[in-house]
Length: 157
Image (cartoon, rainbow, N blue to C red; front, side, top):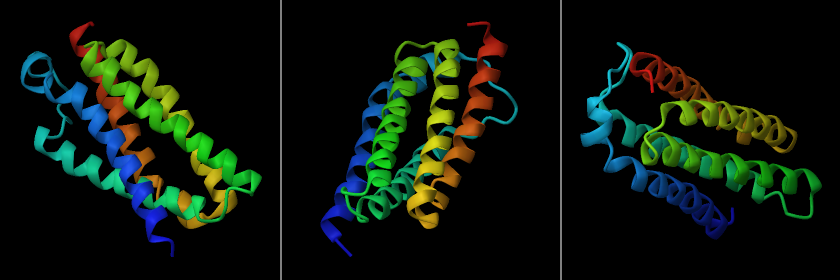
C-alpha cells in the first residue's frame, strides 16, 4: 500500500467538496431556505456527513485505480474520467447554489451522472472494488438530481 497516494487521493476528493461548500454554505440559510422543497428533502445537517463519506469513498476508489500504475492506458482513461466527474461535481455547486439556478444545476447534474457512470464503467476494467466504491456516489447523485428537479418544478426558477 502506498500511503502517500492514498492520502493524496482522499485529500483531492475532500478538497473538491470544500470548494463546492464555498458556494453552498452561504446560500443555505439565505436563498435555499426560501425555496419550496419536496417532501423527500433530507434535513440540512445530513448533507455534510453524506458528502464527506462519499468523497472519502471516491478517494479510496481513485487510489485503487492510481495504484495500478499510470503506464496502463485504462488507468489513464479512468483517472481522466474521474477528474472530469470531480470537476462536474464542483460545477454543480457553482450553478445551483452560486448562481442560484436549479435549472442550470439540473442540466449539469445529468452530465455529472453520465460522467460518474462512465467512470464506474472504466474503473471496473481496472478494479471491481474501485468501481463498487462509486455506487453509493451515483445513487446519491441520482437522489440529488430528483431533488434538484423537484426544487426547479416547485419554484419555477
